[in-house]
Length: 297
Image (tube, rainbow, N blue to C red; front, top):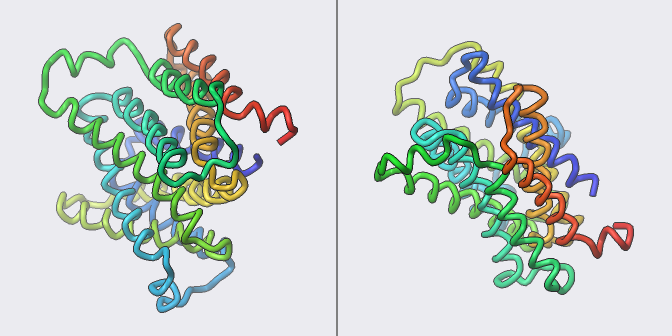
């Protein structure tokens, strides 16, 4: 449970970091690309290794998966950036957070990774988690872009939904079948190096001039970003790779704390629907995991 709590807190920190970029006028794409190399450096330091054997990494079963995830990480960010610019932060966040449906479905019906049989209350909790995500993310301006009828209004959010859901699903599968516990610290490093190199290509194509403050933004995003992935792997192991249990709790926890952080730190106004979403999120967490709560898990 400790790993889950840490993962939630670090993901909320990432949210706060992204929100701060606008205030400090930090170029988001540059900071995110730099963040990936900071992530890789932190991973190397945390693992206590000055380097790692390339031959051992390349021959590892998880290496192709790590390369794929690195590419998807960067592409997903780009999709989120485009959606944020074209449709607004709310639309992007709805698409990203609703993606919890994908790893849950795969964990339950494809990978068969659930640690215990789900009952009607557990399934109700999953459905309520999706409802909570939508309600917690809505605001008065979220429908404007759709009312304008732009052809990309649906394409980009759908791509985020699929890509983010794919990331969580692949991580769940890799952790359960491919990654030995001894590689928990190196696996994210390879992901972030790949994502960073992919990001460099993005920057070269866009011909952006790197600003010094982008390094600051990349630094305070990169440290929690590495550990957010590392602790998700640890949490999955602790939950016996039961993504159907973990991801609803993880995402609804992030929603609740992010909403609280938005109100306290950024003085954002929340609608009654948002508050209802947070309350439903808490109820959904209980319904999904009440067996573990009652057994003192």
